[in-house]
Image 1 (tube, rainbow, N blue to C red):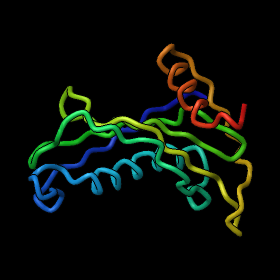
Image 2: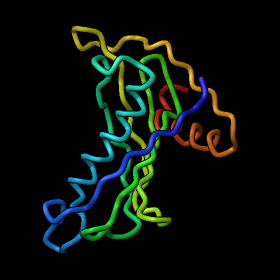
Image 3: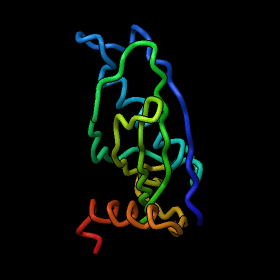
Image 4: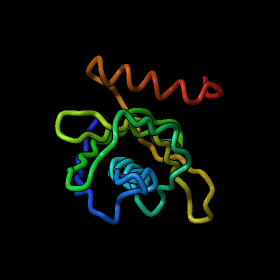
Length: 141
């Protein structure tokens, strides 16, 4: 399956700010997970997709009220029941946050179950992201 990129946007409002007047990391995490979920759920039944782990949210710079945050997410790796998404948040042309999230496909009892998705990277960038995602799970090798 080809890797598809999803984009969603959020206007940073006063209620999204921390005590320093910049975007609160907790709000960013909420949007980060939402963006990753959109990509993962596009390949699998959303009612059977759950977040397992946020592997990193590395902030490069603060975000201020009135700025528009763009989240780009894509599934870059699939295991038997795992779907690993890579998410980048930017404001304008500047990267703000980057990281990975693992989602798991579960059955009606909440136990992991196969999703049947196979991710095939085509570009060099997609291959690098897939290798980075694989390294999150050394026990799978």
